[in-house]
Length: 185
Length: 418
Ligand SMILES: Cc1cc2nc3c(=O)[nH]c(=O)nc-3n(C[C@H](O)[C@H](O)[C@H](O)COP(=O)(O)OP(=O)(O)OC[C@H]3O[C@@H](n4cnc5c(N)ncnc54)[C@H](O)[C@@H]3O)c2cc1C
Image: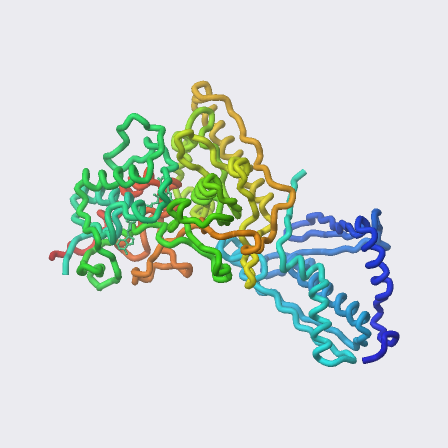
């Protein structure tokens, strides 16, 4: 393994560690609100934007407004103008774990050469179609497969992925319940 | 080998209603009952249970309530007496302590095997009950060994339950009643709430069942409803029959200290219960459904000149839910000693050897007419009418289905002889 100055994964770990220190002392600044806005277009097509969030004690604005189209594939008689919402969840999980892998690798001074993940969620759509109320609407299970090439022993790479799961927001969101309140008008 | 035109399986109220209608048509039949008449009321209900349907509403063909408390709710022994009394009054040909072990097609008709001899018959009425097996999810396997489990079927009274915390799973009629009884007995109860239908016991001075009966809600037919599959799955109304006619909703339970959580979504290998974060929405939806039902009743009252004869319309306050209901609970660490599953029931057809079961093990039928010719089903949720599973619903269903059965016999080959 290289020494602490050599790994270049493009994650500024020092900044993250500094933030951890600062936020330990100022816990209020660690309270974040993430936001998205969604507008129905037509059929199952909707358009969402991600722009502002609240954090570090203040409203924060992005450099760009990010746009997301969600729709359903043609097998659902939809127009396929975007990924399905459940695919967004898969994207969220895979990209959260991947970001975590890079950050943890940087912190452990492991040089990554390539990281690719394929993620698959099994679903029985009898639940969402109302065919069978005993079938859950969500995934029956999710499998993430990583291919990682790095200057490290296989067990260190495994530990990297394990630590990334422990720190992943989306991993927590999909594995643990969350209180959700839906209000109208 | 015995022979008879019709075998009725079971001797609950549904079977008896059918027996009465077949007798009226001169169709010879027998009722095969594994225990005594009204066996499920004798052995599968908790001690303090009272019917949630008022006395006047327990009507069976030719038989109705004549006592002096039509608005009261029968106790369990009174239910048993009522059904046993009906069996006697109609002189139902019941063979008690006779368990049906197989029903199969024997070419000419049906062969019904029992632990006390076999029967051949041309028609079969399945009235073996909708609530034979308590539903328990597979993750119950992860319940720590120190936690006892009961179901709404095996729960009798609080003496059965260890001191300490109790998790009651399910907030329909059974779950809310059991939760109330256990909390009042001094145990801390947590109630896991899924889809449930809230209703006031008394509305505008009249029992809710009076309204639903009068406005025709209970008579809605299975073939006139949008989504019958869904309607058949609707959980029982959150109602209880008590002498003070009080409403037993989640607010009443919170008021005595019951803690509410979302539906139990899982139990992890290390004994942590996980609750869905949907509690607030489940309650909002239930409040909404209740308001819709009451609006429908108000509208009916206006349209039918009943408005002036009952109290003014009113609405219950919304269900109170904590800001952040618990999402998880280490069962052992939080002192849970007992889990009571009040998460529904399913029928047992392990003896039914006819190709009539769907992939989930339910009999496929069209309003009680089963896909095997000459086979009928009784006593299921919304079989022919919204009231089909109620005591008050068996009569109309038995009248319809006995007519169908008689027509089937007339058109089909001559009856079997012994
Ligand atoms: C907790 C609870 C509360 C209820 N409260 C009310 C209420 O307040 N008002 C109301 O109107 N309804 C109420 N019901 C609903 C209704 O009474 C039930 O749906 C009812 O049990 C159905 O009647 P049944 O005659 O079809 O079935 P059951 O009464 O269950 O009768 C079926 C009979 O078949 C017998 N049997 C089963 N398998 C076999 C076999 N293999 N061989 C021989 N015999 C067999 C059983 O022993 C039983 O006696 C309640 C139900 C439950 C579970």
